[in-house]
Length: 207
Image (cartoon, rainbow, N blue to C red):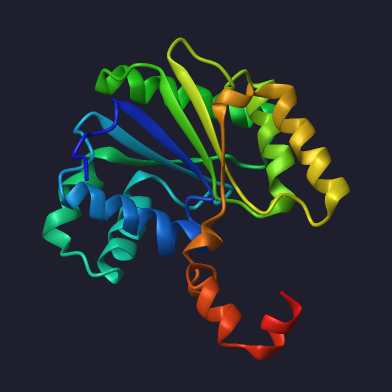
């Protein structure tokens, strides 16, 4: 296994206060940080519509999420305090996205980061289209460095809605910027397809 660290960049998590972020993403980031696999010049910006959060309260949420996954607070406290931030997206208007863009630029300037940005959309399918459009209309789909977008699957609820969502992605992003992730690949049912098939006669007969 390689110990290569990621390039200096900023990870922007849409849905930063949501269930997926609290149960999976923040703990995973915490484990990477605790094991020294995230460089000191990599930062995380949580984004959500919640206007009650700010940097301090989001850092507290992140610590609690990481501690719940088994991490020692002492191992992730410094990372949370220095490299985790929060920005509300409000109602998700273009002006809100432009404010987000200004916050990203401020963080990059304060911490000497190149304009390398990864947008992780840990959002319900119904929110993906508006978020992608907001990023595009606010011109956050490109930068002087690189921009990547991670979209959680599944896309849409049927073939037509999936095609419409893919159309929004292609409107604002080049294909080499897009990463489609299915976190359900981590489910035991998927990890053990052979057991699932041969251990259940009803599925074996249909397979």
